[in-house]
Image (cartoon, rainbow, N blue to C red):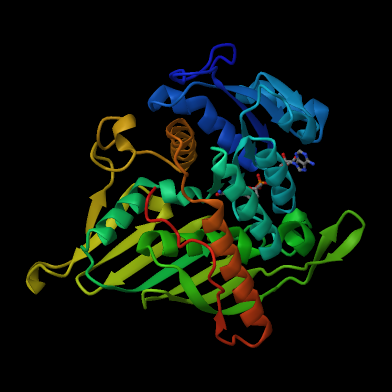
Length: 398
Ligand SMILES: NC(=O)c1ccc[n+]([C@@H]2O[C@H](COP(=O)([O-])OP(=O)(O)OC[C@H]3O[C@@H](n4cnc5c(N)ncnc54)[C@H](O)[C@@H]3O)[C@@H](O)[C@H]2O)c1
């Protein structure tokens, strides 16, 4: 996208929305790609990729040029105070989410923040409260559980909501990676509790927990948890350093509507690169999803005669499938990066329409409470632990 020309359709009143993104590494790159592409495929309000923020002036300037941002900066505080910035997209690590998001919301900026919402429930509560005050002033906020925007999972949610599975009884989810399998993998912010909040639990089980709630429309009310750190110390800048988060998590969930779920997450599952598998079992049918084949959804319709039953593969690439109308002719598959484009599309449309986007900070707070309950349960030998209610149930709408 040319940064001198606004992308998308101008809002009825006012100038194009000015966007700032904070962080230019993994998620900064994924989000930048989405900002660059969204207006080429979807009808969105006009916006400009104004500023990319990072700590290293030279590197962030290079990234800004490469990813289509007009400028770069190193001080996020001065950026969120700018009158020409309307949207702040937070792609920084978890320990910075609360401070940046609250300051941006108070400055009247719409905020998209990466998942998990925060590192602690206390931070998440402050963020949800700031989001509620901002919402009353027409300022929107959203948390980046991008797997809600996989068309196959959005379709799964629709089929469940339409009753095609009958009564959903249980869900199995496993999110497995292996980038920490090597004991020589170095320390990073992701392995320190004070910077990451938790390990595989907050990093990837959070996605699976959000999916369980999103797909079923039910909030988690109780959990059991077990956490393991298989590699207790790793090479850091000053020698060996203690790892203070989990490498893997095993979780069972009880949900408000009576269904049960299991969630397994690991960053030491040797050979598994980014494997997210979800199975949903109901009285009238079942669904299966595998991120490594993300254009597909497995569906068993148990209302068919038994001799005709079997999982069939739905290629989720038809114009009538969620988000697909904007992309290619049917069968021309899409990828992981498209979920971020869908996320930006939905966020921009919510801003245009003055509607609260989903997942909200309340939804992020709900997941944070589940994560905290899992940690509490794990510390008490997997005791069944309640999840305090008090925030809105996760919305079924996307
Ligand atoms: N949705 C997903 O699938 C997904 C995947 C990976 C990470 N994440 C989430 O995205 C967030 C960022 O993770 P990442 O993998 O991109 O991390 P990363 O380490 O790759 O990048 C972090 C970025 O934050 C920047 N940063 C750190 N301190 C800063 C400061 N003071 N001012 C400005 N910038 C600063 C760094 O320069 C870097 O660009 C985390 O919340 C993580 O959980 C989400």
